[in-house]
Structures are given as C-alpha cells and as structure tokens.
Image (cartoon, rainbow, N blue to C red):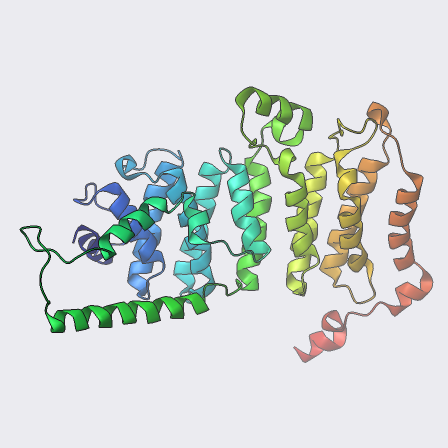
Length: 377
C-alpha cells in the first residue's frame, strides 16, 4: 500500500518538485522509482526520472538536494543507472529522453570519481551488448529469498490454531492456480525481451559517457600503474583505478571504432584518442623501456586501418588522422629511456602515405558532399 501510494504521488507531482517527506520507507521508495522507470505510463516514467535525479545524486554524494534521507545506496544506484540506459532504448518522448540523459550525466559526475570501474563496466556492457542478470546487478546472492520462498510455498495449509485444515476451498485453489499461471506467462513473455540488444543510439550515448568518465576520473593514480598497484596493496581489494582496467577501456573503444554502424565509428576513434592522450607517457613497470600503450598496439592499428580506406567517411578519416598523429608522437619519443620500434612506426606511417599518393587522392570521392548533391538539396 505504501509503494502504491508513492507511485500515485509521483504521478500527481508538479514538474520539478518532490515531497519533503514520504510515509514509505526509503527502500520501498527506491523500488517504486525503479519500477516507474520501466512503466508504460509516460507521466510515471517522467516522475521517476525526476525522483531519481533527487535521490540518486544525493546518494552519490553530489551535494544536498533536500532529500538526503532517501539517498540511494550504491547497489541501488547501480541498478538505477542500468534502468536509465534501458529506458533510453524505448523512450519516444524527446523531453523525457533528454531528461534521462541529463540525469545519467549527473549521476556519472557525482559518482564516477568514486566508482569509475563500476561505470566503466556498466557503460561498457551497453556498448558491447553484454547482458547481465538481475542478480549480478543487485550484487547480492538470492539465498535468503529462495529460502523464504521455499518456506512460504511448502508444508500444510494451517489455520489459526496451527493445525492443518482438512480439504480446502476448491474455488480459492482454482484462483491461486490461475494467478500462478498468469504470472508464469508474464515471466515467459518478459524473458523473450530480456536479451534484446540496445539501439545504436543508446550505445553511442554510452560511448560518449565513457569519454566523460575519463574527464571525471582525474586522479593521477588512474594513469600510473605503479601508483595504482601501491594504492591497491595498501587498501586491499581489486583496485578502483582505470589503469588497472586499461585492457577493458581499450576494448570498449575498439568495439565502437570498428562497429558495423558507420555513425558510431568516429566516436570510437575519438575515444581511443582520449585514451592515448591520458596514457601516452605511462611506462610499463613490468617491461622496462616500453609504454603501457604498446600492449594495445594491435587494437589501435586495427582501428586505424578503416579510417584511411577509400570509402572512409571524412569525419572518420579526420578522427583517424588525429589518433595516428598522437599515437606516433607517444611511441616515437625516446624520453625517459623509452625504446622506439622502427617497424611499428613504418607500418603506421604507411597507412597515411598510401592515402596521399596521386592515384589515391584522385580516387577520393564523397558523393554526399559534392556540388551536385548540394544543388539537389
């Protein structure tokens, strides 16, 4: 009843306002907000996004919003971020979609510096179309729930005296079976759509958020493997520094740069450029005289080759040229005792020089940007 009352309250809220006190407990409110994000009613979805902005930013430490008593814990905040990205896939209202994007960015700025690896994993899953179960998103086991469910559905049907009842009402049993059957059919229908890949627009937005994450994570230990390892040894755990997950970061950018969707490729190349900018001077402590970026040389080269192909879009070629120039500058310097690999540099330069030959320049043609196309428009 409390959750239903809060849902009705969300529907009746004026734009941009929230109640200062609600009779429901914070966990019940949070669950109602998460359900509201998946609601079929546009008004409830919009109200849930606004509530998430208030409760989520407060929970992420983004400043006082007047509702810190209902701040979301990190586990719920993670589910909320996933729910927001899922909402973007099916939202048709432009204003609601823009609001969801703004809230996602607010959460990223408020929480990304504290939990960058969580955001990298969440956004990377969207980009790479990885589907995770609800249990993984909750971050907890379901043993207690299963145990409670087993106790509820097992044993004799008892009356108030504790003694088993004899027989039972056939009509009540029939209604229970109907409800169970309906719930089973609904669960099967939901399971059909549980593994639908996100739209490319949502994946592109997630990729842009990964680029924003690199700006939010501005601590020097994020880009120095030695500092990150020392910090991990002192504090214990798996480490919350991006340099410890450089392979995943490059993999996400490579996925976008080599996507089947041409409109996504420039964003992936620019993401690789951001990665190279921040890790250009990071040495590899396990391989003296070499850079960490050299571990990703194969992926960088594979992402650069389509940028200089004869059918490459101008925006993709421009992004590839910027990435190639910055990467060449990083691996060709000898400062700090870094060893230069002449063969790798020659292969990268060959990508650019092949595009600059007279025959290649004469063959360049962009029909969409020609004078004839402009005249037709």
